[in-house]
Amino acid sequence: MLRARAVLLTALVVCGVSASMYAAANFRNRKVKREDIEWTDVWMPNMNRHDLPRVLLIGDSITRAYYKGVEQNLRGKAYCARIATSKAVGDPALTVELHAFLPEAKFDVIHFNIGMHGWGYSEEEYRKHLPDLLKEIRRDAPGAKLIWASTTLVRKDHGSGPTNDRIRARNTIAHTYFAHERIPIDDLSGLMAAHQDLHSDDVHFNGEGAALQAKQVTAEVEKLLLR
Image (tube, rainbow, N blue to C red; front, side):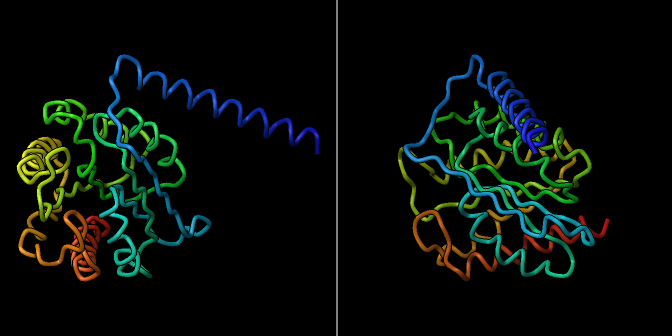
């Protein structure tokens, strides 16, 4: 028993040192811009089952809202997990978080969007660090088929937060970059632009809106599952 505990303790220490070194490398010479409240929500069901493909949704609170619908739509076809976070492109903590969770399972398809946070970063910083996001996903999920989702528009602009002009600018940057990388694009922004009446507040959507997004996400994920 003591030997087992010693082995476990050694493993934890090694993992902790590895994570610390990874974080230090990512944070070095980077000016971090944070929100007043930062959060991360990870949900990985059916981890001991391996009879179906595994899908991962990466995003923020909007992704978290449509996740349940996607999980239900894929029932019997794939197991669906999520990593939802407020960490933004430009914040080195984003890649640190992904590095911590992506190796937890072998994902066949990853559908991702990181766009509704990080308004302290300029669009040029977004452009500069967007490749960091893709590099991290490819590093820790090398066999996964990827699809990027565009960021949905807001009902009302917020001066110090999201505005539709900035969202469109970031979507254009991401669209150009991921098209160059030959990664398919799920245009959730275009989908929801015609359904602004389904907002529950200035940023998020009601149940009907989330279900509409879940239907489209499911369809795009299934295309990759069939390849």
